[in-house]
Length: 192
Ligand SMILES: [Zn+2]
Image (spheres, rainbow, N blue to C red):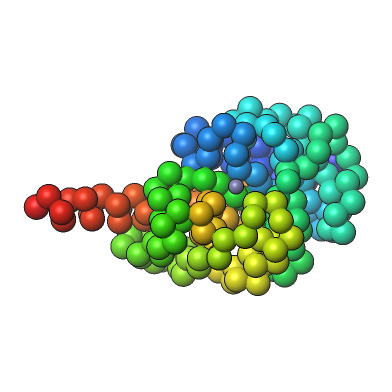
């Protein structure tokens, strides 16, 4: 693997580890990928993002053909592929289930842009209508709606994108922080 590709693979693993440690995702939920030309490196199905090593990463062509790896790719592979096809400008995708963002996702409510980080760094966070996890319908809905950096998946979680896996992680953290701030300010305003 060329050194640039190796670096991005290591950054993918680092972003996954941080996403798990910072409690943006739990158990074996969540997935991530990075694009290298006509191929992507993607996390496997059924593994904890906090425990991944290079041996767990799966290489897949943009057509969906598995090219290398001992594991099966995430069941959200179609969502990653559709998004890369629709967005030549992005090179990394992270799907997480952050708890405060999840509360908004479960209620089908938009996250208000209260924090400067969300306004300046992320911009508009779109909400994607519920479609079953892993389905082609979810993949095409996300690819159609996600024109910025973040989308809340109704009753499901969060998808963030960027130039690198760490960029996508920072966007996820900014969205979760905004959701947390919205939650806390609402609770506080009820009590004051
Ligand atoms: Zn999910």
